[in-house]
Structure formats: structure tokens, C-alpha cells
Image (cartoon, rainbow, N blue to C red):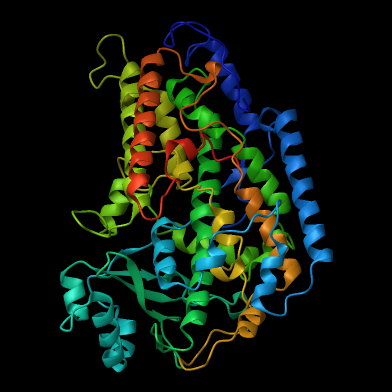
Length: 538
């Protein structure tokens, strides 16, 4: 395990190796020398200054990752030089084979129903919210196109008297609003779109209107019958994917948790019970983040080569969103869902991420609660500590707040692996389905007929798309044990019963999800404990 090792002790509260014992305190001081924080990018979570030796990838892991990259590299070589250049959409399919299997999105990427499902069970199901009123900067366009929009509503609902007001009253109208992207530099080539989506008569979420910018001239709303509709969806998905890779993936999952990781090493001894419960979930996190800084988000690195916004655009998105983000609201699943208005009887059917992730969240919450009460008691009874009297915990929380990794009182830190989903190749592997790079300019009128050639010209050139496929295939690899499957020496002492119950709860959750998938039209596996790793390791 790539974290500091503890020396076994039968009593966590006494002896040289106890959290406040002399040996443990000496080790903590050494950790403060090894685990130093530095602001790699102003406004972003702090990072480890130098990767400690014990945090490096194991020899086996280096070999495994190296072999994977060699195989992917061979695939790129074959696809680049043995397949023809892209002149038409069907040419994109020539690159798929045994190394890069054809994603299912190649068959359905044009469908509005697929676009709706991307908001619910894609790689970024964290943004959609209940629409209780049309945004002010969309009202004028909605009013201009009210007659055409009314026809769309009637068609989707199957009712002649169905209106936007009806959709709002029945909690069937939802919105994804990327106002956070408004005012980004022109060089980033990204929109700040708004999409309205309706739960139709078949209980499917369908897009009914897209506006590509918050304000400005030549900024119409696009409707499903418009010739430019498909291109509008591509540009919306470009904004969605840019946000997903920037904030949902890099910002919250990797960088924020890295800061928590380093602060934990600096303030908690290795025999401290809170360190012990967190340590398995930090495996290889610092190593993969260091690798990313050197190869992925470095200047002129892979992100600059594949994403329109480049690394500077990613950093800007993280900076903008981080000041609004709260661990106790946005980083806590039930509160996040409540805040977005997507919980309640009959609200947003098909939101399988929500339904399944809540099972896992409850298993984690129960485990943490049971574990903590093995060591702590509100009144300090039975030889247990009170949290308020634990100097290390107080220092740890103070350090997290000082680094702004916790905002607001009563916050909790949970495993962010639930955000680190692995269907990235499934979504990103076919560029028109979910592009991170776009060329040209977004459509400014609704009536331009879209051709396959226009799409080829809009997505990046072949070599760039192949590089993106390598990255997404690599990022879709799971390389640690699944959630709850700890190694023997990483299971906290005195917590065997809690861990055993945790594993049983996770198995129950996985079985429930498996049963749900039998009757689902589109099975969803990515929130199952069987597909959630212990740590954010790639």
C-alpha cells in the first residue's frame, strides 16, 4: 500500500505507537517534512510539493500501466497509418478494433433520447436540476419561439393543451444551465449553453430547447425540428464534457482529494483511527496526480492537444466553480440531490445514477458512523475519546478549513470515487457523441442544413481524436481493488465488525442494482459497488 505504514498495536489509545505516543508523534513530524503542500495553480486546491517515495506506484503497477500504454500506442499507430483520412462520417468507424472497441454511442449519438440519458447516466450526471422557472436570459427567445416550442411540447407530452407552465407545475421540466462558463475567453472556443429537457409521455427525458450562450446577438434557441439542432447538441455536449473533465473529474475528484490526502498525512498519525479509515482510499492518488501534472495538464501537454479549452480553460472552470462549491451540500449526495430538486416520488424517472448511488452512499454513511463510534463517544464514556478533546482531529479540521477543502459547518468527507466513473471511453470514444474538442464556431441561425462533412470539419482532426481515444481508454481502466475490498493490513484495528458489515451492505447494494438492471430498458452498472474502486487512482 502506497501510504505510510502503521506499527500494529492492540490498543489505539495507549503505548508508544498510539496516536499520541512518542513514536507516532515522531513519525508525524517526519510526515510533515515529506508531505508538503504547494499551490501548483493559483486558485486551485493545493498539491503535494514532491511525491514521497512511499506514495510511488509499485513495480507491478508500473509494469501494468506501461504495458497498457504500449498496447494503446500500437492501436494508435495502426489506426493512424493503416486507415484512411476522415472524409465522411462513416470513416470514423474504421479506427475501431480489438484495442479500441466500437463504443455503443456510434449507433445512437444522433438520438434525442440518448442526449437526455447523457444527463442522467453519462459521465456527468451531477448538473441537471428541476426547472421551476425559465431563466431570465432565455425568456425572450422562448417567447419568440413559443408557437414552435408549443408544438414540441404537444408532441412530446401527447397532450394538445400541454404548456411550459404545465411542465413546470407537474415537475416534468428540467434544466442544465452552464452560466458558470459565461465570459470565458474566446480562445477557449466554448459556449455557455442552457438546455431545457422534458420528461415525455414515455417517461424519457428529451431535450426540447437549447440556447448556446447566456446573452448576446445571434443567439437563438434551437428546437428539435430545426436543421441546426444536431450541431447545437454537439456544441452543448462540448461545454458539458469540458465542465465534466475540468471540475467534476479533475477539480473535485483528483485535486480536492489530493489536498485532503496531504493534510491528513500532515496532521494525523498513522495509528489514528480517522487516518486508518481514510488511508485505503488514498492509494496511488498522489502518484496519479503527479503523473497528470507532468504529462496531462502540463503546458503543451495532452490536455492542450486534445481539449479546445486547454489546461488554462480547465483551471479557469475549476476556479470559478470551486468558490461556489460546498462539501456539506454539493459534495454530500442526499443534500446535492435535494438542492437540485431531483428527489421525490416520480421525479425524473430513469435517473439511475441517483437511485443506485444513494444505496452506496447509505452503506458508506453507516460504515463511517459505526466505525467512528468504536473510538469516540459524545460524553467520553467507556474509555472513548470526545472529538472535541482530540487535538489531532481539531488540527486536521482546522487545516482543511484553512485550505478551503471544507466549507461550512458539520461537513463530512466521503469517498469521491462515486464521481470517478469509468465509462469515459464509452462516452468519449466516438467524438461526435461527446466531443472535448470542437473547431469552427457554433451555429448562430437555426435553419442551416447539417451535413456529415460539416460534422467532420467541426470535430478535431484524426490524429487528435486518436490521442483522445488513448487518454479516455487509459482513464477508463480500473487499477485498484473495488470499494470495501481492503487488504488485511489496511483494515483498521478494532473495526473488523464494522468492515464486515460494510462489505455485506455493499454486496446487498450490488445485488439490488443487478436486480434493477434486469427490468431497466438501459441497464446502468457504473454506480454499483462492483464498479467503484477503493481509491481515486487513475
